[in-house]
Length: 174
Ligand SMILES: NC(=O)NC1=NC(=O)NC1=O
Image 1 (cartoon, rainbow, N blue to C red):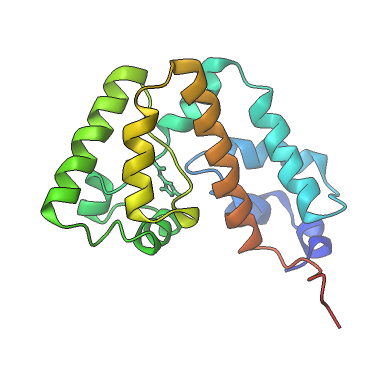
Image 2 (cartoon, rainbow, N blue to C red; image 1 turned 30 degrees about the vertical axis):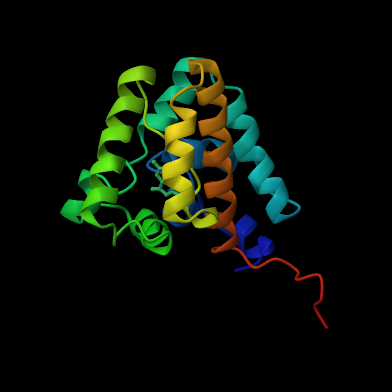
């Protein structure tokens, strides 16, 4: 699908296709629909980013809370969204050994205890070793720093999910 096809989508199709580019936050997709036509995929991405940035702190934390833990209960139970399952598997989070799994669980709980929202990172841009390292390091940050950092990661996840859905003019297009 190219950007012209995106712009031609009726609302229901638009939300069905793009509703999970921000994990479990279809309201974001529903809100940017009215800003079509988008001149490009980056313009659609920018509209989503602007909506997120316009939210109060509680709204941003709400977006973070919509994210499943990495290697957490949802992965164990098979209740992850398709996108999240693929992202977590690609980072090797579905094949942790018991030591890694218990460390991830402990650090995720510690992080949530401290901040009131889960640790969020773009799994597709990291491997399990780096994710564990970042989780451990970021636990020491201040809440405001982690709220901003988590939203940055949400935007990276969104960008990659959008790129998987919309064809863009490859620069080396013949
Ligand atoms: N807590 C998280 O960071 N979750 C996730 N990161 C991803 O890249 N996909 C997820 O589900």
